[in-house]
Image (cartoon, rainbow, N blue to C red):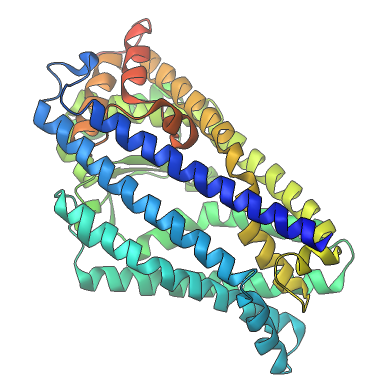
Length: 419
């Protein structure tokens, strides 16, 4: 049975890696094949130079993703069948610490190793690709500060959570149920903490100034029956020229956030339409649905994990001859994605369907032509490719491809409010 587990893992890892590389190769070929002509839906909206810049930018990011996938697969093999997790498990157990403490140390050390291996990719993405295409505004100093802050926040929040999870795992046969309840509560706590405590550690959030734009937004919120704790502008321009807007928080802590770069890119009609789209996610209960789905998937994972951690071939077949609950937990978190990657299109399809629904809501409460104009500007200014490979898009894209999305918006009846 141990050999069967090993063979299944190697087959799943090889298949998922081959699929990733195949999809990326298709994506690059498709983009290059359409590099010399702007799609008909964007004729007059995109210059050929803008289209080619987006194509080259996407190809560069995809190549980096291919290299990252190969390295990740090699690291996973080294840590599992190569004996990395086993060696660390023996080391921490040898210190004679309580299982909960040694288990936490094991998981943190593995996270540190994988984080350090991934750091060069983050550096190259920021100071190589993003800088080459004119998007990066992050200094080395700010990059280091962000990394240190992320590490500190992760330790402050993650270490107590890990200690509690492992304490529950070692203390009850129904640990998987208690861990699921703890994880669910922690996730809801993070929804509240992120906009009010964590995000302000990295960026400055200022209330949107009074004026015509504020009045338009207030009128839109009133039409949509939406209450929030405020509309804020975040200094995204400190790090990047990319623009964005999002809705965050829950209950009384709901916030609407605009990047300052986005406010500089779009006019009043377009900003109102983008906000209407974000409100559509709330009104169509997409956020609640995603939370419920996340809870359901985490419950299924923990239920499966409860069985795997009692099954010795799971450990031996993946390179661990000194089974511990902590080792099993991190092993499952690292190995199971190789088996589940082929299911990725299911989540992407759900997300794209919700984007269509949010667009339809925006068309009801704002000017759909303004949303088309806003999206076109964002595609151009963020160098988003207009010609993704269809299969690659089906796997990865949480938003519909640009051409399909614009065509869908233009086919909707115009029932919105024009400025």
